[in-house]
Image (tube, rainbow, N blue to C red; front, side, top):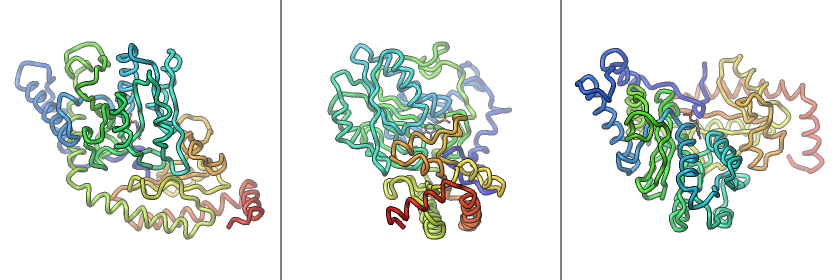
Length: 395
Ligand SMILES: *Cc1c(COP(=O)(O)O)cnc(C)c1O
C-alpha cells in the first residue's frame, strides 16, 4: 500500500502508541478521583496541557481538550456567537473553510446572525483589503483557517491577527493542518482561539484541543462535571491526551527534518507530474503552502474514477470532488479559487509525509500516467477540452 492522504488522517506513531498503552489497562484511573491511580492521571493530563501551552506560547489555563478539530471549531464559533451576541451578530469567515467551520456558520445564519464569506484568489489566498472592508461595527468574530486542508495554502495569519486586534474583534483560526507542522506562537500572531486535532499529526483519532485566550468569555461546551474547569464536562480521554501531546512533541523536535524531507518529495512529485502528464494543472500557491501538499487537476476525467483506479493499485489519495458528502459536487474550495467545474472534478490531492519514499512516488507517477491516459481516452470531455485549448492557442 502507498499512503498519500496524510491530510485526511495519519498513522499513530509507534512512540505515541507506546506512550498511550499503559493508560488503557494499568494506569486507567479516573482523573477526578481521590486515590493515586486517578490523581496521577490528573497530573499527567495537566502536564500535557502545560506542554501544549508551552509550544504555542500560551498559558495552560488557555488549553481545553476536545474530541478533535470539528468540536473545537464548533465550540469556538458557536461559543463566541452566543457569548458575544450582546456586542453584535456578524461573523467573517472564508469560502474555503473546512465544513467544521462552514456548517456552524450556516447554522448561525439560521439563528439570525450575518456571516460574510471572504473570497479567495486563484492561489487560494484571501485579500486583506476585502477583509478590512467586510468589518462592520457589529462584527464579533473573524475565523480564517491557518492552512487549507485541500490545497495547503497558508493564509496571512499575522496580518489578520493584527487587524482583528486593532479593531477589537476576536480571531479564531482552524489550525488543524498547521499545528505541529509550523511553529505557531498565538500571542505574537494575535490569535484568540485556535483549533487543533491529534490524528493529523500522528496522534490518535478523537482527541484535539481548543486554545482560548483567557480574556475571551466563552460559554461552556458541555455542562456536567468539573473537568476542563467546568467548560467541557466529561471524563478526560486520558490515553488520547497522552498520545496527542507525544505526537506534538515529536513534530516539534523533528520539525526541520520532516519539513525538509516533505518539501523535497513535494517538489519531486510536482516536477514529475507536470513534466510527464499532459495538461496537468497545479492548484494553489506554490510557495505559501504546506510542505506535503500536492494538488493537481487533470481536465477531462472524473476524480472519483481516478481514486478507484488508484485504489486498485494500492494507492490511497483524495480528490477535489466532494465524495465526502456523498454528493458528486465539486469541492467548494476549488470552485472558490476559480477553477472550472471540469478542472475541479478532475482534481487529485496527494498529501505526503516525511515517511514516504521517492520509490513510492515513482510508482504513483507511473500508475497515474497510465490511468489518466486510459480515462481520458474514454472521455468525451477531454476531446472537447483539447479542442478548446487549440481554439484559444493554449498549449
Ligand atoms: C481534519 C480537519 C478538521 C476536522 O478535524 P477532526 O479532528 O477530524 O474533527 C477540521 N479542519 C481542518 C482544516 C481539517 O483538516
